[in-house]
Image (cartoon, rainbow, N blue to C red; front, side, top):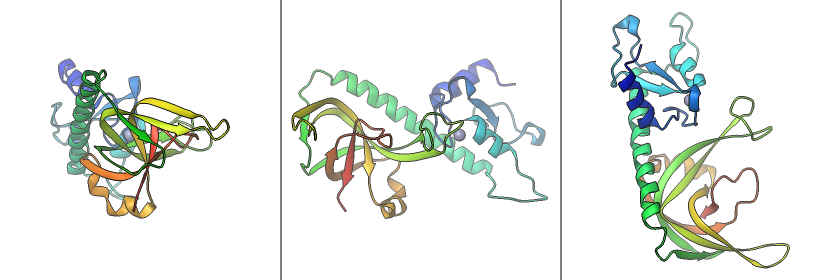
Length: 217
Ligand SMILES: [Zn+2]
């Protein structure tokens, strides 16, 4: 059993999101012993990783007599956890920053305007096909988001009415990049970067940010 205080500390540190796949779990979050109790692992903060039901099952089940797939090592789990706790810290910090900057003059960005933005790169999982509704029944889609240190206002043209629409309080941009970009830039996830590109509005179920950011090659 996990001590109550430790449990609370771990749940706050992960923001009730799984440390491996980062989905929000709410009540369904589970605390896993990185080194199993039967192998001498203690119920300590250091030996604890909050996981979703699926990742918990994955982390726990591995048959050395019939190896299938790639085992989660204890050091990998620790790294996932430490990276995630850091990312949560960073995002909570950004939330506070946003609040303090709410009344300041905001940057205004127009569609098709080439712009360089600073932000924190974040990988986020969403329910994918067929229904885009639930992690239980749908496939999982993962996207890279750029979280801005201060909100911006974005102006876009409505295709039907040709009127300009103002989108305020844009804080999270979904990155639109080539598949090569993901491969060659893995190291930018959970870091602060500067990216150049153009913004366009979120239109379909595949768009999860306040706007989309098409990165120039
Ligand atoms: Zn998970």
